[in-house]
Image 1 (tube, helix red, strand yellow):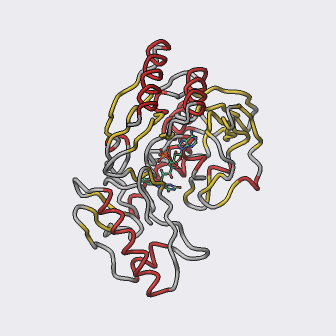
Image 2 (cartoon, rainbow, N blue to C red; image 1 turned 180 degrees about the horizontal axis):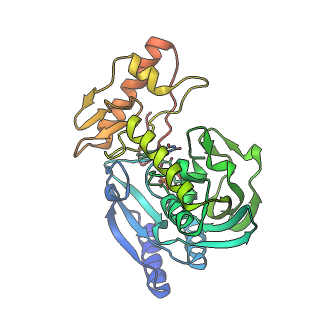
Length: 310
Ligand SMILES: Cc1cc2nc3c(=O)[nH]c(=O)nc-3n(C[C@H](O)[C@H](O)[C@H](O)COP(=O)(O)OP(=O)(O)OC[C@H]3O[C@@H](n4cnc5c(N)ncnc54)[C@H](O)[C@@H]3O)c2cc1C
């Protein structure tokens, strides 16, 4: 660590202690990801309140300290060496508030670190739904928005009314217009602080049935209970990455403890102590084989921290 960097960390730690914001030093990242892979980060900070989150972000940007926003860690591959910077873990930055409701609809303001499953759970209790298609995904709202998470022909973009973003050291609220979204991507840069979602008033029984239906479908086709980060590659236009990988006879192919799922070829499973380097090797191999056979370069859907496919 450079000398001035050491000073910033000292200043950061003192500031966090003053604000009473919980943080950890040299914290391994693997337990915070769904694939359970990755080395430590310098600091992991757990802000609970918006004012503290903003103060921390401003400080990190001003001092040019590298930082990363962590949601549910369910679309993330962290390098074995970890990340020489600060991870802002939003797991405590949670909350759902009703903004407006009519006979048919309800508008909720939801903090970015709130789990999708928590929103579904509140819907079952209070009688609103429409987001069950994402049930079972260990994602937060912020991560789902950043990735425009979707399944079974639906995407989160269809439910989002507005998004509060931190960008260039300022907060702005933007309308979630159609042209801001593309396949697995929210195009606007910045950190998602919260968002307004419009859901439908629904009967409890109907929500539970929908959730069950989607979860059954997932269980049939995905290794839902294994250590993965969901789909590894994006689907090329009008094609399925999984079908291309399967056609290269790669299902079950293994490097070290990283294996291409027998259930779904576009999932990589960590069998125990897989390393990020093994997963990257496997991803490169998949790209090469698919390119040789079909002339298509698969683009990764997973986000990288401290590593890359190059
Ligand atoms: C078993 C399983 C099934 C899955 N099924 C699906 C599926 O059906 N459809 C689908 O789309 N995905 C699926 N996924 C992948 C994953 O759940 C989604 O991509 C999800 O949107 C990631 O959210 P997260 O909170 O875990 O984000 P993370 O993995 O924590 O982060 C993902 C990216 O978003 C950024 N980010 C997170 N929060 C914020 C924020 N508040 N502001 C700015 N940037 C932020 C991170 O920096 C990172 O770049 C699945 C994953 C698993 C493990």
